[in-house]
Image 1 (tube, rainbow, N blue to C red):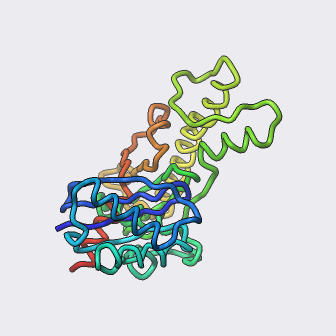
Image 2 (image 1 turned 45 degrees about the vertical axis):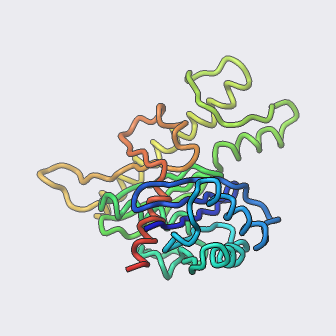
Length: 268
């Protein structure tokens, strides 16, 4: 049984087809405003042709999108190419409990991340998704979303440094090998990559301690404080891993895992 998963981010559209838990293909397209039903349908057909998969073999499809103006185009394209309904991941289709948060402003990608993290681990967690922005979502012991944070992503910050200054160069994020840089480029990269790791460590420790104090992390077991997982995901997540001081779980495909779980859920 094949399932089509589509994740629309601010930079890329990730299109994937899974057979049960195995990815048959994962393809990234640029997110832009020029997509229409004709052009996206053609891109989708070409993806199936490239990987020699019959579009009619897809029995379920689901979409996570932070660019809502593209949703109707993708729904129509999937129906035209695969002949099936595209389920949109939103508040009505993602079973995540939410505490005192404006649901209309909560990113669908964050909801899918939370659903995936709870489905996989069933433990309180602090989830950091490092993409265009760095988002943090905190899950209590019962899987309830209790709040989070949003900050500029690593590449967004690098772009802002170049745009808002006269002499700093335009850079792309890349791995950092030393704590202290010895030139401007190394300083900028170290500041963003290691600075992000330090931010995550500090925020995680504060949120973990607050959750323990409030009971959101659960009760002490045998005198030990309850565990709160630190889960890292997102396209830029791997850059900061060497610089984290806290124990973490790296789930680079957390959102896709969540979409796959949702696709299965909505088929039953």
